[in-house]
Image (tube, rainbow, N blue to C red; front, side):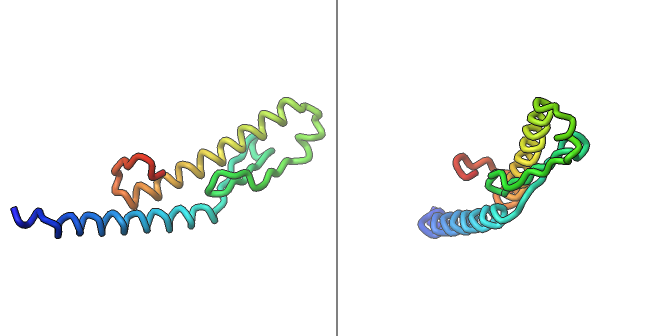
Length: 108
């Protein structure tokens, strides 16, 4: 039973701290990246940060010329949501690499 003493707990805490540091570093790196989503065959392109903040919107001038405001609004929403989805999926994959697939509530 002596093997389950403080040494085992200390090793577990050390591993948890290392995992937490790796996750923090990965989150910082992801925050610096940008992710894109498009809609309307490239008519609208949205760019978001790894923190899922909208950074840029590019709209093909031909879409604006059509005068269809509702369509343009829908294209912007779709492109933005696609960019956010890509950012979140990438973040989840990066965190899964660190956690080994363990679902740790509250970490991301």
